[in-house]
Amino acid sequence: MLRRLGCVTEQQFEDVLNKISQEVDRRRRLGVTSAERAAAIKDTYQPLHPHVYHLQESYLVPKFKQIVEYCRSGDTSEEGLSGLLEEEAAVRVYRFPLFERSFCEELVEELEHFEQSSAPKGRPNTMNHYGILLNELGFDEGFITPLREHYLHPLTSLLYPDCGGRCLDSHKAFVVKYDMNEDLDLSYHYDNAEVTLNVSLGKDFTEGNLYFGDMRQV
Picture 1 (cartoon, rainbow, N blue to C red):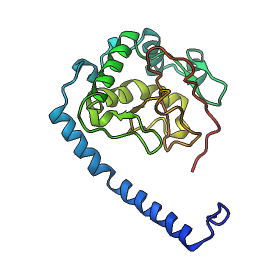
Picture 2: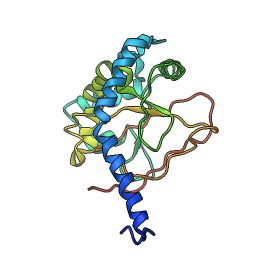
Picture 3: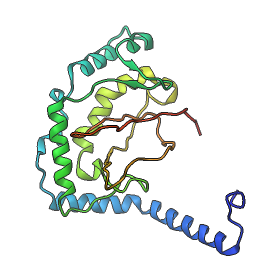
Picture 4: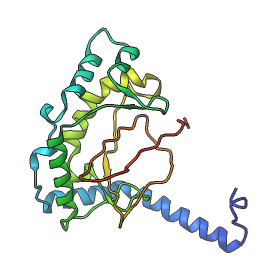
């Protein structure tokens, strides 16, 4: 395979192996380095809006709460749920409102405040150079976990029962940032996730389209 990709000399093979070894080592240390950053952030960072770290029902728009209530009721079906959602062109991709505008504005302000601080920052992946890992910032226990368990789980159980939607027990939550002078886009890729939720955040911007291709099970 490497030869088909143009790797033919001994030096080229050695360079590839070195890069692979470095990446394996980086991934092995991810848990340790992430925990170190989270501890440092907790000790040094002063939040601008402490309340946004704890999920409140008032942050959720009425339409989303209606969708969740339907999913929690006894008389449910995928067809009935589809009537409450906007189905996109891609297969099994849906759109619905989630957060109130006022909460989104405060969340963006909090993220900008953190980005401007001197606290250490881990980036979401090797492709995005600008963004924040929400677990390191302290959003997991009070916000992301209850959002997944109490609100998203009823929804994914109906929409994706064959893809693990009924037994979601973990998550990776992060934000990525795009700007004309920073990251402009993210190349087409596959996520290692049973279910993905994307929330569009920002101030004044255009474009920001999100494209979905076919699903692939590995």
